Image (cartoon, rainbow over all chains, first blue to last red; front, side):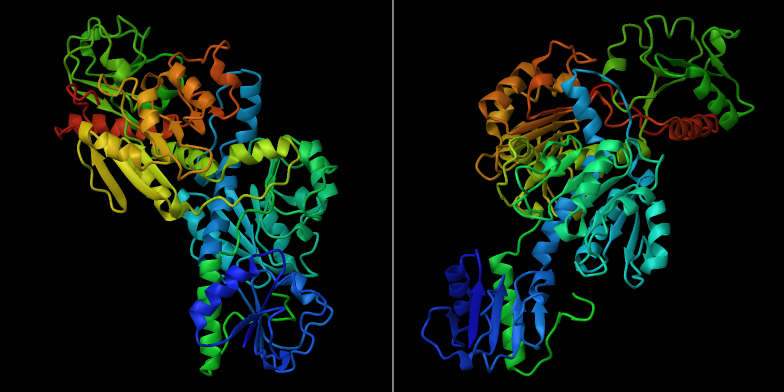
Length: 312
Length: 312
């Protein structure tokens, strides 16, 4: 039996889709009449504190989110395999966001917008994409998809990850030793890291100061499409104001919704979107997790299981 | 002998580069001491009325611009082959501009910018690229390069040109009969046409009214990176104001520099850049035209010769 436990999401709609995909396998919602001991799978999004109570027969936890940082903090998380969502549709949407913001900054949107407001005709020719280096932090499924889409546009690409990742056409840097060399050649920094104790607050004044200066008109740029916990917002405010950064695109925030009082809202070269870079899609989610359940019932091994040590 | 005749461009620098590339073949500038009858090639950018006077031995006209609409209007243009610049570097830069503006609009930049100014956290998930159709007008070198770069991003693509052009992954429409069907499925319209009597004023109220409505949040978008003569600016002002168009990105204008009094400057969903989408680069220009001259001296046929009937 599969139990759905989704907060702030249309649970009934997901349940209906799962029933169609898994029938005759039973699918239930909280509040339905069932014996908790019969639950083998729980599909969660922001599970409450008592989410796992009485689930004595539970075998696998299915996570709607691609990032499981919040789930791993759950105070009563059973010691069972967690399967996270690896979603092609989500990767596509995330890359859509990344490409749009990389290219917007590459083409000096901030400069031309200021000129427009002043009704000023001031010709400046942005560099070719090949003269601009995009540095991607995090080379999992999302980072690799972003690289694959940025490459045909002509950008020079480099990546930084925990362990070296060989991706064609992308210069790979890894680990603590590789961080400074990685930053020192990066014009536009894209964060797609998982949030772990190691990566918390990585978008800080220290990091910004190490980005390449002088190659890219207006100063280096950061784009954060991962987690608010990666960024120190006070540092971003300073860096955008004092010129350490030329611009920032932020889709995620330390506190969401971003409080009205945040100074980030009012900074001209800060581009805010309300955590909409990518969302897990019901259709692809049901297809993916229904297959996981069917394969697991048939005795096949689980895929995309979270490594709790690494945190993703 | 090659004569350079470039207006508002650093002629001396180009002459130096041409001399290095063509030596010992002679390269001269206006004002140098030479016999006009010895000139075999003239390399022009915005030639003055007397540019061709006395050039009785002229064989070929070399045009720095990829677009030759202005040159073909020259009152004293000799009836000789015109070679236009087909420049990979220029295609790359033009595609950089096109991709940046297509993706910016696809990701609903205007909407999120308005929300940011109002400090409003309002989640809206843009469609995936595959759910959005980009229609490219003009499938020459520039249009094909733009298509080649937009395709890996996942967009649905269609093209419209004078005669059908088969490009993989791009639905082709052509001629007068194909124009309405082309527009009726287009969410984001990109103009890369040559400017000819047939294409003058093509970005008009009539055209805007035929674009697809209802598929794309905020309304259809136009992007003009070709010539100001393609657009009717009064129609664009109306369409942006009354909601016929959701947004416009304009790099070119009927009169350049765009007059301070133009209402376009002040329209929030109009994105103005000062004719900087792409510029011909000296290095690639000298390499290209030096090869043209050498090949022609060696008796080989000219490439990229303008068809005066078609106008490009």
